[in-house]
Length: 92
Length: 92
DNA sequence: CATGATTGACACCGAACGGTGTCATCGGCA
DNA sequence: TGCCGATGACACCGTTCGGTGTCAATCATG
Image (tube, rainbow over all chains, first blue to last red; front, side, top):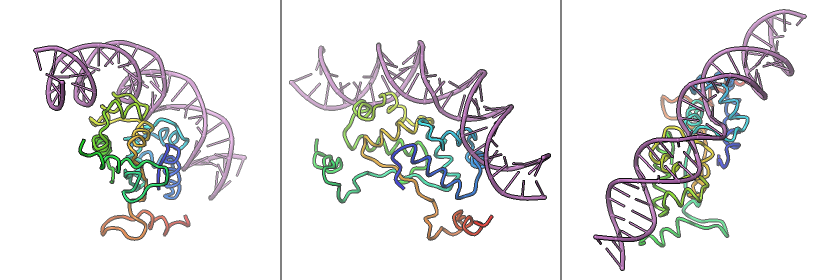
């Protein structure tokens, strides 16, 4: 699922944790972070350390993907296709 | 592309930035972070703030996705399918 | 009711982050 | 040669993150 904000990531984590029937404490131990971190992250704390998130995601058997927003083929009307622009200019 | 570690995310960011012919400074301004952050992140700094990464990714027209590792249907042999386990136990 | 597990919340505190500013180096260019 | 942009690197410093510990509230259960 697309993740645009920390809040969305938090929702993903919380939902997954609940689905896996893990307590915050269990997840924290699995991921090697503190329960406080889990609690605060799920609560939508605006700042969070990427490394911790990666570990938590791993503990939840979730993976993270990065991909170009304009998925090569088409782009929404009005949207700027950076890839296309760059390709067009790729000679300098 | 799958992102397992900060280093991989850093590589993604750097590669993308170069491809878009943006300087660290330009990217930093676009994303609203400091050049130092960009530089250190690309250099593989072990700790980084998720919010900043999200903004940088956005400035690079990249998106982030979270998905279950064992893609619902099948799992590799020997791999543990947590979803399946949980489903089987979902009565307690 | 008593017990235990889970969770939200807070204080404390050391460690690290992140911004600003600065410097040297490297490469391109006139 | 001299200039300029980009980058790696560092010091300084305020902010705040993250861990530990603790507490009250909630809920299920015996």
